[in-house]
Image 1 (cartoon, protein in one colour):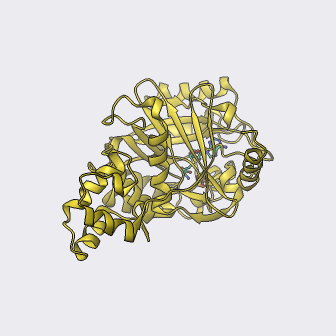
Image 2 (spheres, rainbow, N blue to C red; image 1 turned 90 degrees about the vertical axis):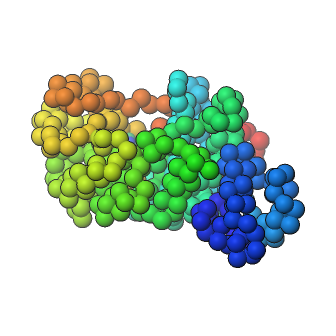
Length: 362
Ligand code: SAH
Ligand code: SF4
């Protein structure tokens, strides 16, 4: 059985054509699946009966189980999906006035070992399949019934690949999922509303530019190679000059005319006035915006967040040099839902969640 979430429209079209079915049926199915959120072939009323039978014999629509589904006081909602073998990934929905942003995961764990990241500390377990990536969006839209105003306006209007994992290290599956997000016959999101966040895998940035240029966020986190080598180890392979060349290159096709630089504020590590001035110099030739992220602590991290005044001062220096700089609001604090805050050991957490469910406490 093939999981339909794992294939793209063209592949599906040719598979059904080989079996003697009209290719336009593929588009009809896509509409049922992604626009109508219908997974039962029998209820896809305008599909011919023999085609529905063929589908039932060869295909299925399946997505991971949900271990945890919780809504924070501020409306942020978090799901924990079961990835088997006691692993889990997180998906977070952040409602705002005029949009709903879904933060989705791309891998179980991450191999890149950024020192301030709890995912990186856990090491790498496996890549998510295309189905496991797109399921996060499908399930969120389907479950956020309170946020629907019509079938045309789904609750999730923006997607950011800022959950667990490094999206560009799982390139094919991530790009497959991105294409479904952008496809008019599926979600039809504009490229401006879909963001890939990367710690700086230079060859993959250059490839993404041609394959699927969505909005790009780069986890910069340091104003020079010395600090970046220490906290974002991939910098030793792709240092700042190569990263910036790739960013310049990407801008030729980027849907927005700037790159977003993410910068986690780590007390006494990368947050001094001198660091801010170094940054001003570093980015002076590139069109960019900054998003300062207060560090989200987790046990035994060894780091502290810069305090509020320090972050504001850092921001002011950048703004005074004409760099648009925002500070990321922490949302969903009470449910550990802040982006990059996949705190603690996920395996333990999943087990804990399963135990609580079994004990009837969730
Ligand atoms: N792997 C990708 C995307 C996932 S992380 C990347 O690194 O860009 C999303 C963002 O959260 C990244 O900017 C990441 O550096 C940041 N982040 C990770 N751990 C964090 C923490 N403990 N506190 C604040 N931000 C964190
Ligand atoms: Fe991986 Fe991103 Fe965490 Fe670095 S910050 S370890 S790239 S998930």
